[in-house]
Length: 226
Image (cartoon, rainbow, N blue to C red):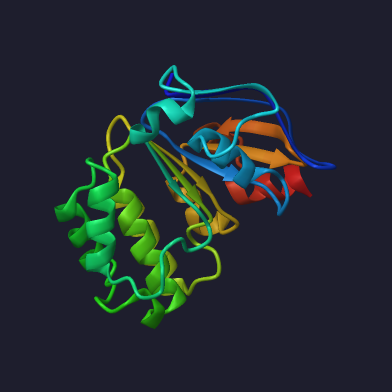
């Protein structure tokens, strides 16, 4: 088992973000983490990344608390974490200093594949910055990639390039957990779909099993979360 979440609860002041969440992640899967705004998706990703601790329950990655295996985890937040003056070369230098597993060659290949310009981030479009952030994340050699809304608010061409990059760069033995509202565009990537509603897992299903029932992930999303 690559990772597991057992009986996890997380509260922010009066807001119960997660309630009794149980989840097991296997190697070699692309998992869609789906839900409406406020369902708890970002909180769950941050717990798996070791950026938050649960109030109750347990989170493990490779048999350890996530903070003990940071080198095997990649978390891509929805908000851009890089300064506006940073160029792709600056990003590569910084990531190399922080993470020994950062692959310069793969980073530059991904930047070229997704047609990211070599100018500072502050001079890029939102879609170009999103593609640059994804290239930074996928250039690391990790076992678990946690991607929080990498398709949010960007143009169709950028979304297409990001999805193609995810298909191209998916690695054997690795698992991707992808949170997105662009369910229709991304569902072709998913091996599994986990639906969150008001901090609880309301459905955890293999996508192929849904298809055998004559349902798409989009249809299931509407049915389960309406």
